[in-house]
Image 1 (cartoon, helix red, strand yellow):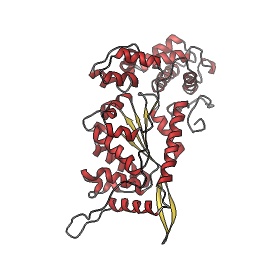
Image 2 (image 1 turned 135 degrees about the vertical axis):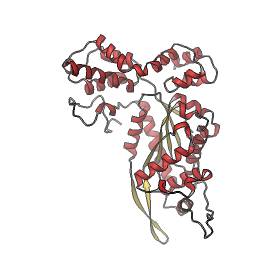
Image 3 (image 1 turned 30 degrees about the vertical axis):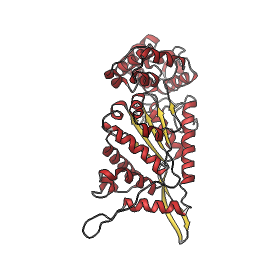
Length: 400
């Protein structure tokens, strides 16, 4: 993972100019063991899935043809659709991969790293058949955001739109067909992914509000059915609050995390990983300051401002960079940084206060759980949501 094209603590960074087109700090990625385990499982599931979805096998080719027939249903001369079959792929089994991470801890960077390794785009493969040969598309990955309010129809539209943009098809322009019939949406999405031999579906930006809405159970069920019937791996990147929505779906949870949940947590103040992240942020945002040497106090001060959330730490450093350039200065102290960081991260302060409260054994109302669910640690979120004492949850968190 250290070889992926993302900024890391060991990256040699040249000072940025004001005319830089790309903000390299947004690509910050320092590999850790939990992230590596995610990549290992994703690669394992993708390769195992393709081994079972073998187009050299006549039975699976027949299933693929059936899926395409379902997707491109025809109509008789009276305007009635001709029935088509849709079912479970041969040897298919659920291959869900669940990654639970609080807000601003790098879910997007994990998705970037996974897609960078698995690949994006599509290619054509040729398979020998009894009648000569046949050509099929193979789409490596597809990234779709969780829908606003959790509505399945919105998810389907986003799925098809993302598919069209990658494959350069025009399914989203159709006005008839299974993709636009309520009862056929899930089979149609399965058929679409099967028809292009999708390697991995990535569902990201799954937050508390949208994943716990009254519409969300249908979307959770759809994702479970998708991986169970097609055998295609589904990587879901969700927050702790969103996990409480999935926890209520007894069927989907077994499909979407058959091997358990991968957890990404904010970095500890004195860990080597956090020191590496602090160094990478400093060398990207402030390479001109203090003689190009990171002060010894910087990692701890950056942690105090962000509580170990990289997505909060970067704005704090960028605000300091902007202030120094505005005053044409090249040196700053710990107190000045604390003031600038507090101003830059003010929008996150209510959530950071909730995180401190969770670690301190504080209690939460249902409204505060919903408001801060994307940030509160998973242990506290699940135990409190289930009606257990928050102090017990905090002790469990500290022990772990």
